[in-house]
Image (cartoon, rainbow, N blue to C red; front, side, top):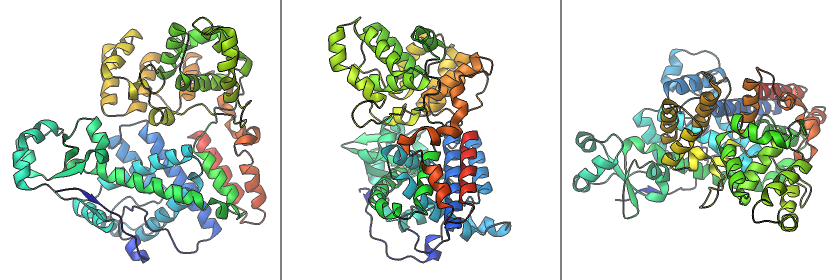
Length: 515
């Protein structure tokens, strides 16, 4: 028997049907009219929720007790759905469950408008929405899970008892924590392997003839893949409607402001240019570079060359910590000419890309240093490459050797490898930070290599850090090439819109600067 996943066009749904369940696939857009005030409030509070999801995801193991408790607390505080309707009737305080689900539904679609504009925005939005969906779906009772899947036309057909008996030995040895008794007592689903790549990668399922056999407890992985696919397609469709949305002068500044809020500090703004000399880079690489940049620097020094992916990842990182264009050209030229590239070839073949990186060539785009999410999810390294995330892309044994070489303790290496095994790559990097800086627990959620560098400088400097990270509120005035006028446009639009628009965007600024 096969796994069936077909979507059918949904007809008009009443609010009772749409908000009948705690968890939604967001297949039906809201059709009601809402005030601009409600539009703004819903959008800001949803963005605060997604930012909390991101921070918790890099501070705790997802779905651990601490993670679940803190996310439950955030949902409750922001008045989003977080418990069943029956429980809600027992302790009715604040908005009703119907009002919370309506807010959840509408706010999701508002942020689709803000986060469909670029690939990076879409990637961030999808990841946080998937993590939020995972938490909610996992917390549902079995009967509500089944009802949700049936309503969204996801049909899971279990293999027959005869087939399960024939494959019993294979299922026991391949299923995570499997045993003969457990195999007999639970259903298994036959699914095309490409729909369960995470389970295949973690070797948690039996693979045969292009199909994997998934125990009922792991079916959430397939549901998440379907949710991710639907949302990705929906964002692509939403992007086509942007011209019409941007023609509304009330909405455009707010949507632009929202779409810039998630990233916190903009590491492309160079406020400490020249404060780091080329002579300091070797020393800093051993003390304050994250492992991804440390290995790029080491390979550059050893081989006097990096391929394009490595040059982009490392070059933008160096730009973010304060290297000027002139310093960058000198740095790369001096290293490359020590290898097989002479000065003339460097100027013809490589100097252009460095100037392009700084926004001085081509489209004059001022490129931003890569975030952890971009390093982990995009452009995986192939043979001969050194870019990417070592915790995500390195073989565990090779990673262990690197950590030993960098004098990480055996117990620390075991902790890091355990996090890597669970695919918690940013947590593994955060643990590496704690071990290499001799601190018990970090007070930040790590999501950017340049953030790692800045936090390292804080620790090593006794709290004194390079000044650039304290000036985030000025980013909208200093980066006109990247939507910097959004805050000023919002203030101008407030003259025609409700007066609290400026207050809301200011609150949003302060929230994300403190986060």
